[in-house]
Length: 145
Image (cartoon, rainbow, N blue to C red; front, side):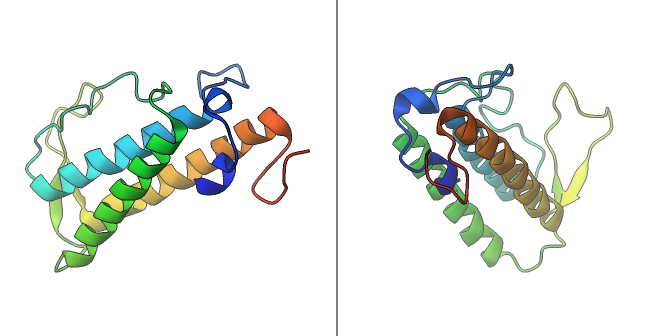
């Protein structure tokens, strides 16, 4: 997520450029929060609900862009370190029960959780490219116009 955020001011990181509520800073906040929450789910593996999992304001820009970029890098590094320490990616992890969960307990392997994080990051990187290009014409391969 560093490339779409390169040389972006805090004001631009908080700016909506589409009809959705998404902002560049909000996306990075969401990814940082998601990494942290999924790491808690992986570590406990008991279905307990991490604090902040039901936060409906995860996409709102708060703090500074540099804060959220650092938080994302820290959370991703912690996830990488923990996943590397697992004896197998086949371990079963009980997922927390949320308002959108099926009524019966859900279990994912650590592998599926890692793939989910990769999918989330890729999906939101695409959103970030669109937002960045709307801000100043830059994208992951071009500098600002």
